[in-house]
Image 1: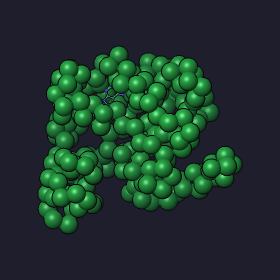
Image 2: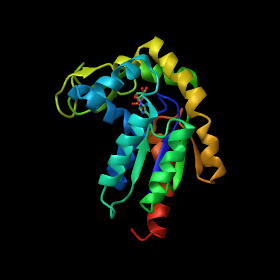
Image 3: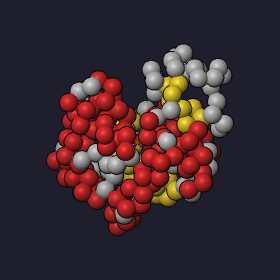
Image 4: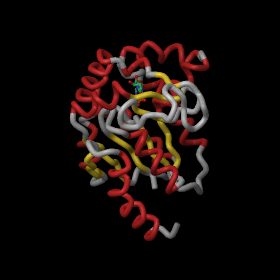
Length: 222
Ligand code: AMP
C-alpha cells in the first residue's frame, strides 16, 4: 500500500509511521529525515537545505523532488509499499509526485490526514527529543527515556531538533497552513483522503486504523 501521511508538524506522522512499519513492513520515507541526513553529511545538498530547515521554511521544490524521485526508483517493486512522511508539502510537489508515480506505474492509494490542534502540536514539539544516533523519538513528558537524555534503544544521546524551538515552530505551522493544508483538497478530490484524529496518542490512533490495513492486506492477498 502506498500512503501519504499529511498533517501539521507535531501531528505524530513519524511516530505513527514507525508503528505502521513495524507491523506491516511498509517502508517509511521521510523527506525531513533524508534532508537532515544530508545536513549531517555536510553534502552540497545538505548545505543548501540547512538554512531553510533551520528557519522553518520549505526547502526548494527541485531539491526535494529530485531526492524523492531517486528514492522511489530505488525501492523494490515487490515490496509492501511505502509511506511518504512530510512529502508532498505543497500543490506542485503533489502534482509532480503523481507524474513520477505514473511514470513507474504506481499511484498513491490513500492520504491519511492527521488532524491535530495547536495546543497539542506545541506541547509535542517543544518536548520532543530525538536520538542523534538512531533517530528514535522521545518526549520529555509523554514518552520519557528511561535514563534522562539517553536513548533506550541504542544508548545514543538525545537532543532537541534545531527547528523545534518555539519561534521556528510558529514559522513551520504558518508554512503548513499556507502551503501544505491546501493539498488536503487535492487528495479529497481524488477520493483518497482519510481523516484521523491525531490529538490522540499515536498508539491509540494506530489501533483505530489497523482494521483499514488488515482489510487492505486481506483484499490484496498479501
Ligand atoms: P519534517 O521532519 O517533515 O518536519 O521536516 C523538517 C524540515 O525539512 C521542514 O521544516 C522543511 O524545511 C524540510 N522539508 C521536509 N520535507 C520537505 C518537503 N517535502 N518540501 C520542502 N521542505 C521539506
